[in-house]
Amino acid sequence: MNTLNAFLITTIAGLSTIIGIIPCFFKKSNQDSIISKSLAFSSGVMITISLISLIPEASNTLGMTLKPFPAFIVCAIFIVIGILTSTLIDNKIERKLKKDNLYKLGIITTIILMLHNIPEGITTFISSTSNEQLGLKLAFAIALHNIPEGISIATPIYYSTKSKLKAFTYTLIAGFSELLGALLAYIFLKNLITPFVLSITLAMTAGIMLDISIYEFLPTAYKTKKNKAITYYFVLGIIIMFLTELNIF
Image (tube, rainbow, N blue to C red; front, side):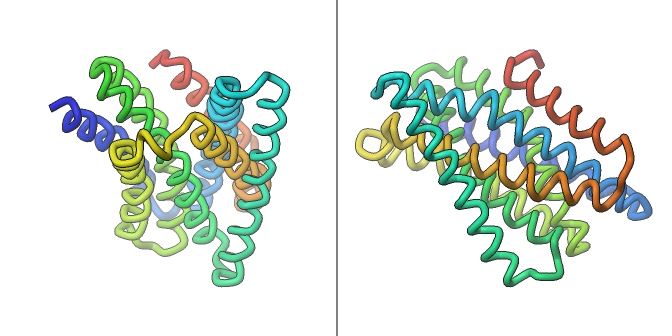
């Protein structure tokens, strides 16, 4: 029964991502404003997740098997690998979507957040299996920050394709990757999911997030609409994710 509940808790946490489709129902006359603010907000969200959650967690987890300095070096190496991976993904997708920058951003973000959500799913499942109350608390915190992550997928996909179905589908795929993490934990827990594997996955994901936020989201946001509101939404994304990571909400 604990296993079934753990799967259910993890799935609910992941599916909260689809709430991020709500901005797609706003008036189309505000399209440029919604796109630019959503991208700036999403950039703040992903930079904050990387700096105060993923990188420290990766470093601390590596510290379980390595001394502090080697752990720092390994973490830094895999952050760089993440950045290079992001650049490679961006170049591959750009060749196919040369004129549709927003759609490209949506696809890349879906891939990135899938990579991010899989370790979250593993963590939520393991926590829920051993302590259901702890799992529920963790799932609630994850659900809160999955909503702005959903916005970062749904908004560019919808405004580039005009399809709410596509926005919903890609957001759903990213959310369901949490369940994939739970399945991996259930099937391969003893053999493959080691602290080292988790830590390098987190470090690479942080690198990918930093790259797309700084070199894709923010430039596109300011290119679409230049005003102070863009900066405010960027800061708002940072504040909200900082609060959710501290479990203040």
